[in-house]
Image 1 (cartoon, rainbow, N blue to C red):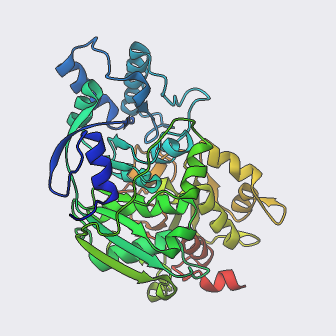
Image 2 (image 1 turned 180 degrees about the horizontal axis):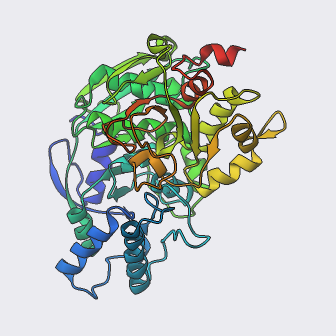
Length: 434
């Protein structure tokens, strides 16, 4: 009998079964449910309709509510959404609410979940956001669900899930200086397409992944959904344990893929052969090496989001921007308040990240999703017309960052920073060698 994958083991255990394999459909117990200001009100409305206006959630400690998308705005509808969350949290006495009007506010949900200790190996984390798969970097099963499913979980703590097959993606070797996890996952998207992993679990392995710190692994798993995957996963190791244990004392049970587990497919990459990548409009799989687009004029650069707004992302951008000046509008949005603080404490040759970004001519905004999902007209960094934008975000569909008349290219912080200096798309390799 063949062994099991990480996904199969986690889902089996949460269904109280000895063995479940790809294709099986199970009732599973959920560890964490996350929702935010975009989907939270709809989820709450369905929950109240189906369970009753005063019905309690299944477990107050396991419902995490993180407003983050349309926060710093005068838009009345957006503010009403947050008020709905606030009223529900008060009525239910939910402890895990990151209120944007208090010092409990943190920022982008996917990064907040990790920073606040909600991502633990071996667990099931469901969220009303497609990029919930980011948390799979911690060796757990994390996936996005709709409002109706979320309302059911909110009331019962359970959900009917189909066990996905696993596709192994091995990144081996030593990363070139200008290549990041964002380049690797863009290369993968370009190779297999936006439907190349439909309803599969992408398990990232290989020596290059072993060398990555947790934020880079999160970038890999974050974009699994861009290939249609149910989740992205990295097996837990000592880096995982150190990160998690520094943020929570809750126990967890790890799962690892057996050597003889059945795989749907396997893709192997030698990372030394991967150059900085760029996804052209209007799809994350429309990928070519950055050097092939050198000289294409851009109007705006954007560094931020759950994919590209972590401290490590701004360190990379600052390495290129230090002592230089951008030639196009450049917006920098830290993912969380913790990252925002790091901009003032992390230094490169005695200069803080914020000083480097601002001195180069960048505009630094408050931590949130900001323009990644477009948002109201006063959203920081939102595209307003026919701009050509190079961004560290995860999607470049028409209208994703604002105006549908704009064009969005996707790249790593290195590539975005180098391009901001030139006013056109650039391979960042030369900038790091100067």
